[in-house]
Length: 75
Image 1: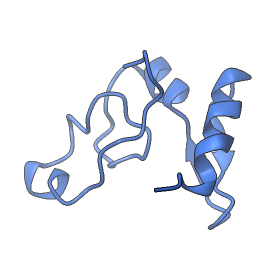
Image 2 (image 1 turned 45 degrees about the horizontal axis):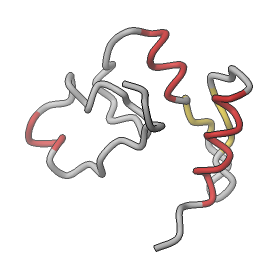
Image 3 (image 1 turned 180 degrees about the horizontal axis):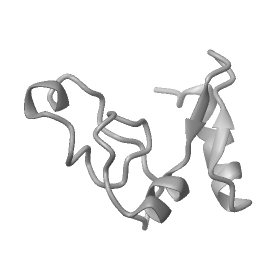
């Protein structure tokens, strides 16, 4: 299975110390894992790169979300 187009953009952005990138498929701004680590908590929005495993997302919603995508060795 190939990775989504945004995966490499996320890795490069985090490596450069960035907190957000533009999803190449949608044009939406996405917060990086680094942003969330600096925030130091789950905001409950079901973010793509939540290193807190969507801890503040309601349980009934959390089960329908894809697993957060975080970089190896973090979170």
